[in-house]
Image 1 (tube, rainbow, N blue to C red):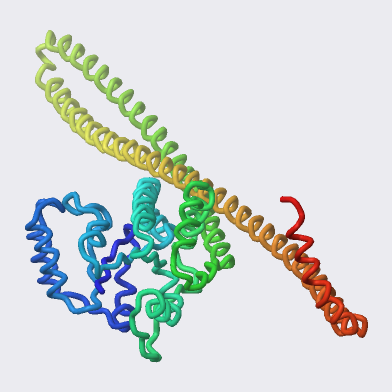
Image 2: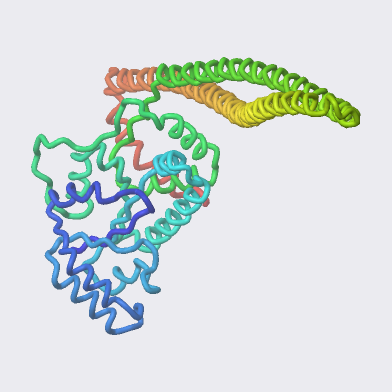
Length: 429
């Protein structure tokens, strides 16, 4: 027998391959599969394609596991294998979509698109199963890994494989320790629970799958989730403190900028005063030129004064340039502080929204757990009442059958019984 494997996307069905190998299944060499895929062209209507498939099966040991696409390959669905080859059996493997959704959210991918892809693949897998119930088997990969002994026994009972030898080798199981993706697991579980169509699909998959027991309930470390929430609050508080410090720094920078502007205005005023004084000196010099006797002496005095004023003006110009450079640096620092403040405010809002969503989901999970607990208690009480009633009826029947009157009237019942049957037969229909 050859097991043709089809699976839902991202279920990592290869995890059960060691269990199948221990149950006696062989896997064809990778080179043989690649050769078959390269030659499998033209579809089911092509004789060369059918010959390539037959050659692949004839070259494999029996039983063997062949992995093909769950969707039509070159226009050839999985039904082709069971229709063309009598010794083939479809092994339809699937897993729940929560892990896929959590992984997508952790990788910043769109979970809705992947969920639709999984749902479409699961529907096609069920269609293959409905059309080939006698030669198809549905298996939950996670259930098989959680109960390898039951899976081995199921392979023996339903697929005719030999039982896997008992060993102490560890099998992968669901971890009971919370991880950093716990919040994504909670969100994924709620997305699945809030979709009636998806729940119906999962129920149909579970009903058609091999009975391998139930998966262990996921373990949520609420204390760790709470600690993460407190860490987010501490980070938010640190951001708020940083915001206050940045505001104070911005105020000091603004105050310094105003001081520099006042100093610049004072320098400009002094420069204007110097310029007016130079002009006045120049006019005085022009007037003194009329006096020839003091012309040279006055000219030297004025030239010396002009040089001093020009030197002072150069110093004032240099000081003004330095103050302008400082002012530009303060302006740049103000722009950078504003951008940093905006990023901190945006991060604070994101953290608040994430915290609110986390609290809401925790409350929803708690309410749902309480509701399940109450339903379980009511079912236990009803079961106890019915069990007591059944035991009372059994005691009553036993008492009646063991009574002396019942034993004494046994011959009489044997005589009357044929007449009662005849009376029942003579009654009109």
